[in-house]
Image (spheres, rainbow, N blue to C red):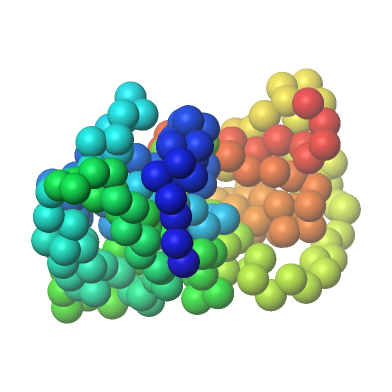
Length: 218
């Protein structure tokens, strides 16, 4: 994979997004792996190192040091490991920008381990230009979306309550649904998961509680 400085500038001009993240340098690799895991769990994406938030491209002086620090942290903290390719883009004689190209993983959800010995940890997804820590619901949706099977569900009382709530309020979260339909958390959660998988609802990951809405109706 090759990328010219001109192609890099064109990419940077799009600004940060669901599939693009800028980092000036690898100062805190443990924070940067969140972005990598989030890309691998969502739609894939490119992490650009040597690019400032404002879109200027100073590059880095010692690209191999940056790669070493980041790759080392990926090996230690990610489970399972993400796939990625690295491209070097020469800015001038002294400075280079790095492009980490991360495809969506067929092993998702990828976790960031709490410590070197733990098997599980936090799962992140990409939403807009942010990497967000996920709920149990989103983790289950990621896991099951890989299978691409048709999801069947019964349209019962709890689903009717959900639909009339959404007609009135447009959005709902897990706790609002639990209260409205008088359900326990487990049943409410599973109902929402299945309706997202069945393409009836869309879900917006959110730290304060995921937001569900009817798909194709805004």
